[in-house]
Length: 303
Ligand code: SF4
Image 1 (cartoon, rainbow, N blue to C red):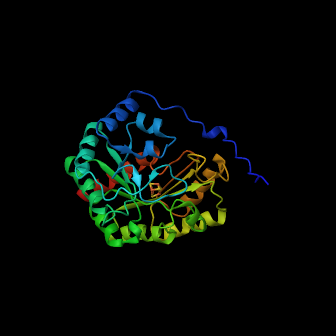
Image 2 (image 1 turned 120 degrees about the horizontal axis):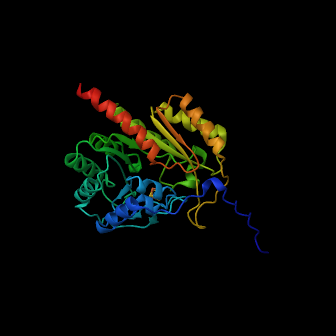
Image 3 (image 1 turned 30 degrees about the vertical axis):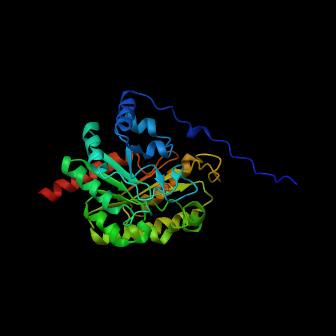
């Protein structure tokens, strides 16, 4: 007998975005292509790409376009790059940032379980090279979990990114279903805790996708877990199914509910909360806020 499938949810009006366009958008797109750099904006089909690129912000993805993990929500290709890496990438990225005249950059990477140090030293060298070329640029990194190998997390913390982000992505119960089986909820919390243990002056950040079947109690618990490891910033966004092969959307969460989560998280002591259907881990409004915080911290450290 033919198996009946539950109907897919229709996309609500609040998730419609304009197609990307504009001078800055074309300039960044051209530069990324010329330098053969990957952006997570393109790979992950981020709905805010037009807004961010038009505003001069892009998230650069290191170590290629093929990830050794296979998270069921993610559009990035899965495979085994067999140790291949562009040794000059840190210099290329630093050069492109200087050309784009960005004052806040977000650097992320695919997971590279095929490399002996999972790419941690390459990532750290990119951060230090960017800082050497432009000491004023503010750097946010969004990292893999390095399979919970904390010395690798510490190595990256020592490169002194201004914001160290690592995403729990979803609540504990759904982690195994949503993320690659090598990713663990507690392991991700431990990554964030290790950053603060190593250097309390680094800001930490994590993100949650809503609409995957999580309950309110589970979201509350996740927020408590993040505060318990001293996480400074949290963001909430709607999960969108990139293709039919990916996990289905269980719920389109109403914008009012996102507003409620924002107030709840602010009340729990997060330094900054971004919450809305189209909010993504790197998001212009959040970056603008963190820029103000980091600049203040730098002024205080100088005086
Ligand atoms: S680790 Fe998961 S979310 Fe990150 S790029 Fe790889 S598949 Fe995507």
